[in-house]
Every structure is written in structure tokens, then in C-alpha cells.
Image (tube, rainbow, N blue to C red; front, side, top):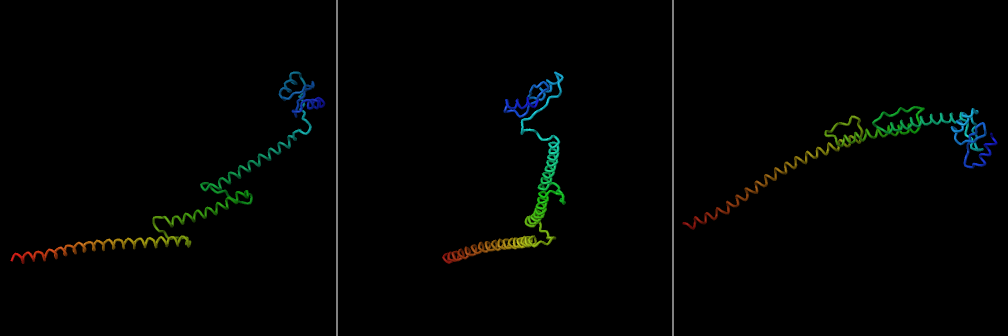
Length: 201
């Protein structure tokens, strides 16, 4: 049968596999060859490969597949951990000696970012909170911002008082100006009346 296979490969250069039945009949389809063997009560057909195209040992392939599947599962786990580490709404994965180095780095960065995010939150609160709250942690930057806000608040209150005082003074001045005009009119009218009295005499 080997000679039949070699002859087949010489005549069919594009084929790398042939299945031959007990009567020497070559087939390209394994099922067709098996059906032919069953119909004629032949032994199972043999499969031949062109030289250099033989497949690897099935046991080795099975082992490689198992290793590949295990590696894929590990990668899926690592990707899940990375996704969790990057998502602040999810719990951060714990890091130990067995943790993937990339995951450990991301967790470390996340911890730093979380601290920075918390600090930025304090800064935003110090800047925009409706009421001033003392800085219990005692960070200089936060205290500086709170002091600036307190100074600004005091300055705004002083400005408001000055504006109210200025408005009151302006009202007082406007009142004085109005009274001054009335007095001047009286003075102007009074001599004219006296002159009329003199003339009537």
C-alpha cells in the first residue's frame, strides 16, 4: 500500500494525504474510504501522508492543547484582574507573590491614583464646599486654601458693609443737595417779593 500511496502523490502534486483501502483504492475523503471498506468487509483503510507533511504525535498535540488551554485560562484571569484593577467601582484584586507582575503594577498605580483622587477630592471640597470646615488632616495646601477662602469671605463682608455705607452716604448727599436747591430758590424768591412790596408803597 505504501507504494500505491507514493505513486498517488507523484500523480497528484497538490495532495498531501491519501486514504487507501485493502483493495488498493485511493480516497481523499476518510468517510468515503471507510464506507467502501465496510461495504466490502475490508479492514480499516490506512492513511498516508506526503513525506514532510506528517502530523505530530496525537499525544504531543493533546499535551500542547492542554497547556494552551491552561495558558488561556491564566490570561483570562489576568485580564479580569486588570479590568477590576482599572475599574474604581470594583474591588481591587489583592496582590501577593503569585500575582501577575502587570496586575501588581496596575494595582500599585491604582492605589497611588486613589490617594491622589482622595486628595483632589479634599481640595475640591476645600474650594467649593458651601461651608468652611476645618482640615482635620492638617495638610498645608488644604489649610492654605481654607485660609484663603476665609480671607475672601471676610473681605466680601467688609466690601458689603462699605457698599452699604457708601449707599447711605450717597442718599444723605442727595438729600442735602435737594434741600440746598430749595433754600437757594427761597433766597432768590425772597428778594423779589421784598422789591414788589417796596414798589407798592
